Image (cartoon, rainbow, N blue to C red; front, side, top):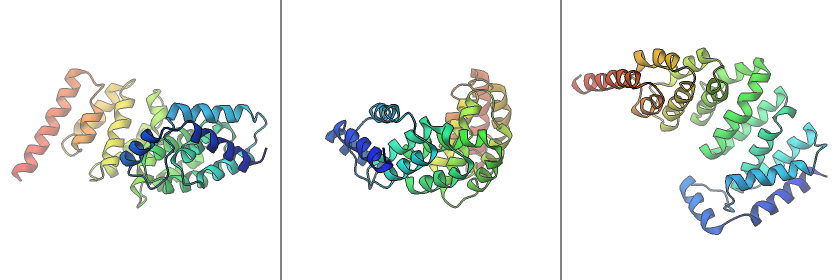
Amino acid sequence: MAADAIAGDIEADLAAAGDPKRAEQEQRYLKSDLRHFGASVPATRKIVKAALAAQPQLGHGELVRTVEALWARPVHECRAAAVELLDLRADLLVPEDIALIERMLRESRTWALVDGLAASVAGPLVERFPELAATLDAWAVDADFWIRRSALLALLLPLRAGGGDFHRFGRYADEMLGEPEFFIRKAIGWVLRDTSRRRPDLVFGWLLPRAATASGVTVREAVKRLAPEQREAILAAYREGRARKATA
């Protein structure tokens, strides 16, 4: 079955699963210029899974063409379905596909698409092909804050599982710690919070000497899973830093 036909069937199923009221609310919440059908995330994933089940012989080329066909449609759920396709068939991806992923990240302009692409697609691809870490290094200093956020979130899943490259994350986070952009501050805290599930002492040791200069968003997110005494030590350091700034 041709990629355009697969994408067309997925689009039709997404439209049928939509809710106009949800579509209006979601479009307003995301401040989106795309059309919205109002299909939920679970419904979108179910539709994509069904489409893949109907194409058991789907190869790399057809996968990429289907993703591009869905992404070209100015519909939020079609783009979300493209992300789901890449996530569910990540095993078919090759290093050269990082260029497609980066293009999609640059065109997303919303966390609702960026976060899945970064954490669930780009991250596992870099894990499989470590030479792509150089791409993350470039993303971490990119002018586009969504790309910088993607560099952080691409490291999220292995860190959450107790592995991953915390040194690389720490290097990126140190460079971004003073950024005013909310989505960067939130991402740093998010990765720290999820890393602390299995390695709270690692997070505590990294964040304590930086708490005085980190943003409130970063600190509040990062300490959520720490032990009470660790949490209070970091919050005290954060408050002390704020007090010094206020009197400077």
